[in-house]
Image (cartoon, rainbow, N blue to C red; front, side, top):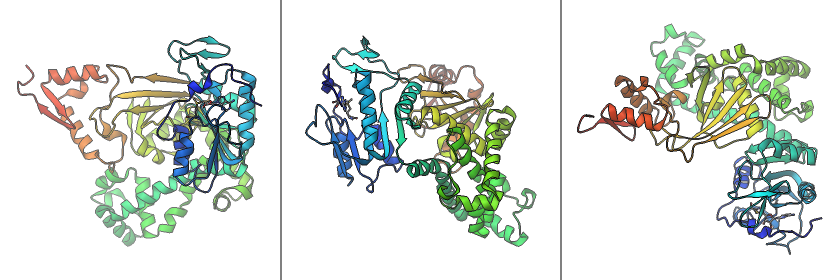
Length: 483
Ligand SMILES: C[S@@+](CC[C@H](N)C(=O)[O-])C[C@H]1O[C@@H](n2cnc3c(N)ncnc32)[C@H](O)[C@@H]1O
C-alpha cells in the first residue's frame, strides 16, 4: 500500500532523453533482452519505458504521479529506478521495495542515489529535504545493499555504485554468477586465438612446434622475444600454440579449466552462496569437474584452499609476477581493463571481491595491492586520446570488509595523471606503439625521473622547463628552446 505523498515527489522526476544508467547496464549485461518482459515501477515520465519499447521489449510502467492510471504488472525484470530515495516514510519505502520484488519473476533492479549530498539540503526524517522541496534519502553503498538484503531476505549483487540486482529465480541467479566467472574468459580466448592464428611469427612458431611435437623452448626460436611482446606470457604462448595444433586441446586444456572452475566456485563462496547442486551447474562445468577432480566435493575443497590465498601476501605477490602485463609501482600493480581477464585467477578473484563491494564503476584501470586487501577502480578521462590522461575518480574497496572510499578529481585543477600507458595494456592494444614511442622519448629527455610529475601542473612545468610541448602523443621542441 502506498500512502499519499506528504511532499511534492513529482518534482523529483527529471526528464531524461536516453535510458537510465541501471537499465543501460542491465541491457549491456544481457539481463534485459527481447525475451524478457520489463515492468518499470515508479517510471517517472516514462523515458525508460519508451526506450525499451523502441528496442522491441515488452514493457509497461506505473508511477503515482505520472502514470497512476497504469496497472501493476508482473514481469521477468522489474526496475525500481531512483524511487526509494524520494520516499520519506521508511515504512512506505520498505513496502515499495517488497512490492516491487513481488512483481519480479526473475530479477529486480534497484537503484538509488548514493553518498552525494544535494546542495543546500537540510535534515529531514532519515534523509534530507532539498531546496526544491523534494525529499532525498541518500544512502551509502554498503548501507543500501544491506537495506535491500535485509528487506528482501535475498542477496543483492552490486551492479555499480547505487545499483543492485536481486534475483527472484535461482536459475537466473546462478547463470548471472557463472557468466561473470566463466563466460568472458571464453570470449576473450576466442579473440586471442584468432589473432594468434593470423600472426606471422606465431605461425612459424606453431610450425616448429609441430615438427618438434611440443612447443619450442625460447632458445629454440629466435623471435621468441617478439612473440612474448605480442602475446604476454610463456604459458599463454604455449597454450595458444597447442590450440593451433588442435584447437580443441586449448579449449579443453585442463589447466585453464581448473583455474576457471576454481575461480567460479571461489566466487560463489565469496558471496556466501552455497555451491549449486551438480545438476544445476552451468554448461559442461560438472563434466569438467569430474574430469579434473573426480569428485565435486574435492573441487569444492580445492576452491576453499584457493580462496584462502586471497589474504596471503606471498600468494598475491606470486600472482603479481605472473600477471601478463601491468605497471608495478611500489607495492601495487596497475593494469588496464582490457587486460583484466588475463590476470592470474587469484587476482581476478581479488577484483571480483572488490566488485562485490562497489560494482562496476565504469573504471578503465585497476590498481591492486600486494597485500591482497585493497583494490581500486580508477577512471581516467580520455585514456586512448590523451598522452597523459587525468584521473577522474578512484573507488577503492577494502577487503574483506564492505568498506570503500571515493576520490573524485573531476573538478580538480591539478589531478593525478598517468604515464607509461603502454605498460598497462597488451602489445595488441590500439595505440600501443604510439604510447611506447612517447615513453621512450620522454625517458631519453629524462622527463620521467623528475619529482612530482604524477600531477598535471608539475608535469606541465616539467615540460615547459625542458622546452618541449606535447601534441597528441608527440613531443616537439618549442621554438624558443625552453628559455
Ligand atoms: C527520481 S524519479 C525516478 C523516475 C524513473 N524511475 C527514472 O529513473 O528516471 C522518482 C519517481 O518515484 C516516484 N515515486 C514516489 N513514490 C513512489 C512510490 N511509493 N512507489 C513508486 N514510485 C514512487 C515518483 O513519482 C517519481 O516519478
